[in-house]
Image (cartoon, rainbow, N blue to C red):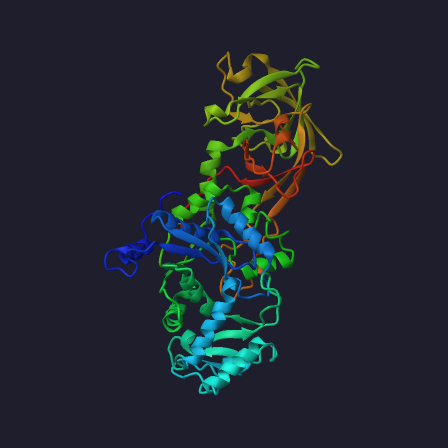
Length: 555
């Protein structure tokens, strides 16, 4: 992996592993704790890169541990997707794959230990009563069950586990401080009853630990030294430390919070991404407009460009929004050097070259990538009938229009200079055919008489063209901050985020294109075959990004 720029997390770790530090002599050990309730998105890629990058830098270890303590929406589909996407990013956890649910028995045992110490009790407040009695700033919470005898709480906790109470009837709460200014410390819930089938444990359990209780225990059991979390867990850190100090675990991990990085013109909440999927605003978690890793992959983003993006934005103590254009910039920098060049016509009209010999076909050579000599060249067929883009001809052109109109000359890329002589309209009044003559002395960039031709357009030979479908993607939202407080993000859905063009034309060589292969369609942008729907004989290309680089600095 590329070296990370120095940041405050590394400074903390440097102190911790120095002589006299809390982890002096120990191996730096981090973890990734994804929830298997959705597909990972670009925000997760940033967190994955950070935790694994830290471990790599210090010659340490990084665990992949699924936080599967809430069975409601957890599925093996999401476990498999997360593993696959992390591997695709080029990150490796080796043999260090764990599941939080594998620690359920030990977590239950430690909860019993808290009850025996008088540090936890069974509470019978309903969820509504719990909220009502939570108190306010300067007003302590109330719990009428706080002084319940230890033996009674032990008995009720066991009966909870044995399915003797309905869901929501009881919880196990920590006994900490009902008057704490940090509401997370006001006797938080440690366990709740939930009758749901677990994707790994089946129906073995009907009580499940809360994340704030399970997370520090799992970190301690795995000998994690540095538990890296996003900033919203900062107020939860006192509870994290309380659990470590008061349960019978042998190690004391350190939780460090960092600021979230979000992208403009998108949402990052898995709950909201799920809504986009379930309400059919997109065609799945892998829709190319989604910020999921799977969606970015299908759109044509590379793992290297995403890792480069994560490296550039760095890590900070505050959350901020990053302009999407930076992600596109990272991609363009890579694809400009690696993508196969090709010509494609997205809105084709026919160009007839009237003086080109009938039945004749010429073969020209063009570079596959002008930035990479090793990429070689390809052959392009040329005849008296080619396709050009409708935008490259106008009946009444404006000033400084340098493409085709009657009487004007342009160069056909890698071929000849042609001069427009006329055009034809279809029954609807649209241009259907353009006519021109060519100068046979101008092949390959030659201009024997020295005349200047300002315009250069791409084309596709009509006799050998391959029919393709092209999908032009734009931002899914019309507002850079669709997730603003008080707004329903769906009100900013962009109705023009996808334009599907059929009957597009491309060079013959494109018919062998495979999913994951990157192309630069000259003058149009970067494209890749759609990994979901494209197949031989029915090629569908997604536009990954346009050619124009609108990169700006992060907000």
